Length: 221
Image (cartoon, rainbow, N blue to C red):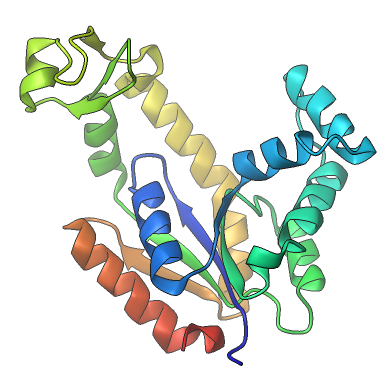
């Protein structure tokens, strides 16, 4: 039996991380596990720990490292993660990375994938984004629906989100970089960081990610 494939994916907002994570999960037959999904699943269990998580989420509070570690431990023990997984949104700090590596000992994480897209490209993508206020469909300026302000799917109003202005986007990107740089350095120091160009056709980006994983992860074959 091939070893489990344990992957982490990073990427700024607007880098196309969700699209690529879905593709990779399907390609390797492993679950794509996001932080939000883990928290919601834990809260829905009704267990004592799950009720604790639900109370924090309902109050809009920050989830502590201790609680998040419990959520991760619980999720990665599920049968569908036995052959591997793709984590999205965790870890967020070197301390969380240490915990994850210990949890997955002796092998630890196989690879951390960094989907690299220049800031200016991300700013352009997000500031051009328009969303239907009724059904949530997403468009980009240049699409007929975005330009006409009428949703092609439901006829609803298409507008820019309040937090998709250039100023807001640049603030979010600066926060992301400050939080993520030490984490990426942690993986790089252990020769487990792979950076892939996130600009181009989604098929080409997916192929580059698969090639990087196949070259560097023991559980990919």
